[in-house]
Amino acid sequence: MLGSVVTAPVIAEHASVQLNIVVVYGIPGHSAVHLQRGSQQLYWDPGGFYGTEYDNCVEFNSAGACRRFRGFPWEHLKTSRRNDVFLGDNADLLQILSIYHLDGDPGSEIYTITLNGALAERAWQLLDEGRRHGHKAAFRTDRQPMFCVKAVAAYLDALGGDFKDMPRPWFPRLLAAELQKRDIALTASYSINSAAIEQYIDNTRQAANLSAMFSSIRTDLASHLTGPP
Image (cartoon, rainbow, N blue to C red; front, top):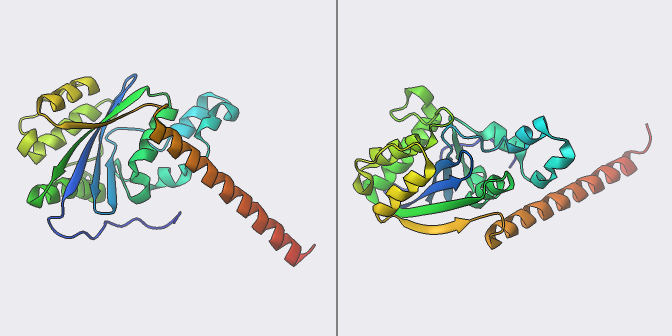
């Protein structure tokens, strides 16, 4: 619900975690981490601008030129970011990728590995503690722009296992190459023309149109019931 307080999810100890490493191509490109644990989602956007795309668009263009962003919960996204981490609906991966591609990023890839036991718990804990504790956390999640790839690599290295001794490249394509070298599965590739992205954008706009229509109806009914002042 919009305006509600987002709290850390209560999750069974040692539940498996699906770790999705997000690689976005473009200029300059971007890298991030998405975690799914049961029905809970977490998105770490180190040094990124997820949630501000509409504001950035209207700062340099007319509002009409930014209509492609209509329907997304921009105010909620901006207020829910905490030390570069999002939880819940704002961490929905298809929403994130839809916004990236509406903003002009030409392609994205998702590399996925399932973590279990203590490693799964650590993967979630590092980012959630960074979200809650900021600079006091053992692993800081608030990062500077342009350092996203290095930040993601540092996080993976902190997990160890398949990611032990991860190099710290500057560019998303080099991170993708390293993941492929380590046999981390490329599970999905997207662009603005991908069926899943097109469907998500259409559904979001339709839902926003319905919400606006019902809001208008409620306003008309309230005016009718109260009558003129």
